[in-house]
Image (cartoon, rainbow, N blue to C red):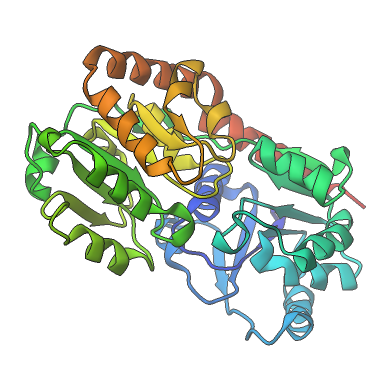
Length: 373
């Protein structure tokens, strides 16, 4: 019988690590069996699982403080008898506690990044907890160099315990941006309007309000429109800002899209305006769509992009909005530069971030962990 992998997420919504897990499960086929626990009960990402995938969704244990929740997760571990436990981010740390108190060592913990509550400063209790618990995991997986440094320097993990596995995407799913006139018409976006866009969960740490403010600061004669692809708790705040006179009629919220590739094709520019990132998949998707990029200089964004893009990375701070606006105007005024950057971005993602390479790395790690004593 194939090995049983138990995945524990804080939630299983359609976001970065959840969607990556869905794609890995599809690629692994019948080599593993999977069970998924979503700690808050949300399982929207499961809709993306392929039909017939060897996956079960387990009931979430009631949240009742770390030790009580860990005790309930101990019951799950005893009942399910997984061969390997995979935990994701701080929201699943109770499962690491449960495994450690049972003496279960076949644990791979994944750290993907931080929400707005730790975008600038780390919480001491979480740092100390990670220092104590994560050495008990077989490996700690991180997608970015910045997180690798945090894991070894701040959490004091040995370099041998930390595994850097960059994200990857299916390159053949993304074609060069061509304006996608049919989609623009369906969304009410003029065919000749410059269009900047972003893709991701609408939550505070992504700071899409910063993007709207930057667009509002761009010279209005450009007639710049914005396309946001994603859903989340910030939607009402974004809608309220978009309704103000300086942006009215120029902001388009497309909601969550199972296949964002056609929406990237509609764009002229891609923007990433987050307060914190590690290795954003949306940036890889935009690069694969041959789009030029403007971005805040966070996480591994600078390392992901080719050197030609460096001038369009903006440091966080009081001038970020004005600098983003200036970068947008510079790019829109230079069609040849946009084309050059788009080609360089596509070349970089093709060389370094293919899904197949990522999949093989994860498969190898999980097979290694299954052999651990």
